[in-house]
View 1 (cartoon, helix red, strand yellow):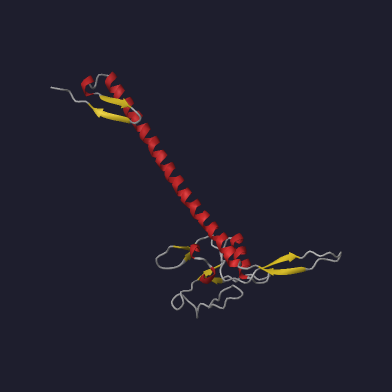
View 2: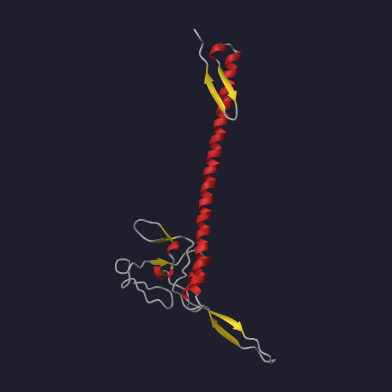
Length: 193
């Protein structure tokens, strides 16, 4: 049974699972850049690498990382674990008046999860909006193509009507009158008896 790859997490799929605790397990992504971010989030040594079946539990992802699926919890392809990770330390140099090498002190960041969560949430929102824009662009292209086809069809019909009128196949009283305002309208004029 797989266990969560985050260093401080003790969740195992045979103990903490979706039925008992609502915890799901997600395999490391195949994309090398995203996989590197997941590995870094695990808080393990730099030489550590997940196994083929390595997973991270859902407790380390924000709700914005999950797609709306009716039967299972599925992550967005760009989701990165940011919650309940190891404590992050930042190195800060203290100013000294001596010529000796300056000592480095590790300063604890007050709430690294909150910073990472906010940043990741913005990244996820940006990705969602990019997908929406892409879908809208595709719809605009399809509509523009439909308009071009309709205009070509109208032009073709006008040419046929003009040819029929010139060959006296249809009379003046049956001719279709084309009015052009902002939109081309077609009206049928019937003879008055």
